[in-house]
Length: 396
Image 1 (tube, helix red, strand yellow):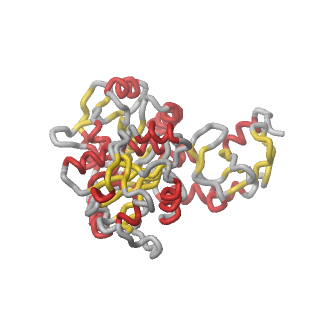
Image 2 (cartoon, helix red, strand yellow):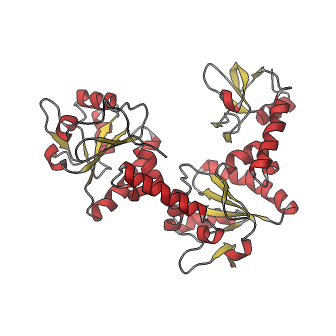
Image 3 (tube, rainbow, N blue to C red):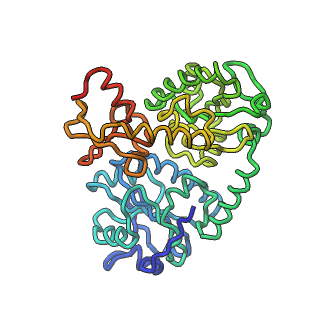
């Protein structure tokens, strides 16, 4: 990970020149009070570009607030300044009201435009980190917050290098026990029974990050359960562990009751640590751990959707064979076709020409590799979904 800034155009400038404008030397608190820009002098600043109409911003807002308040409790010199991309004053006030930090006044369009251009903002949410002297430290603050949380402070290249080195050392010494056990707990749950983690050492393990309240999780769990059953009949050295991202234990219990595999006991702190360790930014996610306790891949969901049980044991050698087989089969696929689910012709694309990753517009599941895509508007479907439609006689 290397998100340190290198642009000379945005590398320097004191905070006043960055956050003030010709007739404004203040920022706005969530309650609408004016806060002098001078109060932020000497602090590390996160410029947060977001909007209330985008779900990813709402989700990141919660994470950033958690990190922000934790750093405040620790006495760290960190402040966030919201740069709104909202459509109107009312939306801005509603979204800013959920935040514990200050903002550029919504009406100051010139300042917002200046900041967007200065730091090359191309999408939201975006978090740009400035040093206490106004130097640009990081442009990928969102990723850093997701991956390291408050540990990323003060966001300097030196600090990020330290975290990367620590992470490498952790992964190099990774074992199944280190991943799943906590102080005072060395077991997992098998629907009411406590089973020692040591029982699963030497097996291929899938860590399923999922939640009861999110529809894509239920859909993937149903597919995975069928594949799991088939694999367990053939390979007793395979297991799946449910890592709950549910908001409460009741949802966790309901979700787990419908699963045929084992689970970690409900513990949000353990889930957060594992999620950050594997940099999980969306669910459902399936991380595959090899028999030696090392990570084989974090793309288990993609691989299950693409190859189903044939993906086992998820080694690079196995996946290479499957890719070669699929590439050979692709030579016989039609280069383009018509599909009743879309009004334009769909063209065959590969991983290197637009085939992955994507969300299949037919089954709404994650996809990767060969696919059919509309070059006009990006509509894209799995090859296997096309086959299902063909078999049902629905293709034109």
